[in-house]
Image (cartoon, rainbow, N blue to C red; front, side, top):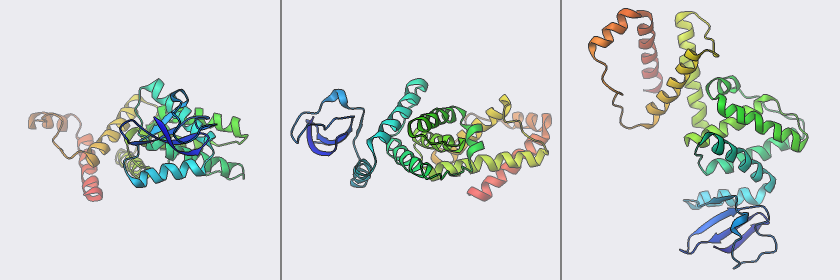
Length: 258
């Protein structure tokens, strides 16, 4: 690949052998280089192949405006999650997380910290991603001399989850609201406090997460397997309260989400 345009010392636009463009990030990748030189592949830590002019502009604007140190941090966070958990992330998360880290640190250095209304939901429903957010928070506090509260760990986790699911942040927040609403409905129906540390609660939360994804994104809404009338009758007889609660959930979803 040859350098077509230098964005800064850590970012270039390169041209591949087939003539297509790719945006490359790497510490010092453009240092002492000029247009037409071959790219040092050993220095590449992230590449982007934007699918549209808007996406290309967003990546270039972010590279121009944000200190490369935040790209390196974003890369470190994402790559650890991918390496240790075997999770695939969308390219867009590297840009959105980088922008978030830069903005958050800038605010923190002024003594401004944001609260996260989904903090407890994220801790409950996405403990794995939240744990990486906590690890990243410690990196930020140490490197920039700030003192982020745990809310920031949840913000970072949201970006990781968004990159994992291929959803934008607004869509993820809608899914969190859905899970919270259904859980609240169950609590009120049975007049109980659900212990979010139990295995049964975690299984319920997982079912709700996958149900949301299926409800919103799958065009084929065929049921998973056949639930015969006989089996349904057994369920109704063995736990009529659970069955009636499920009917309430069904009506709530039909009313709220058509």
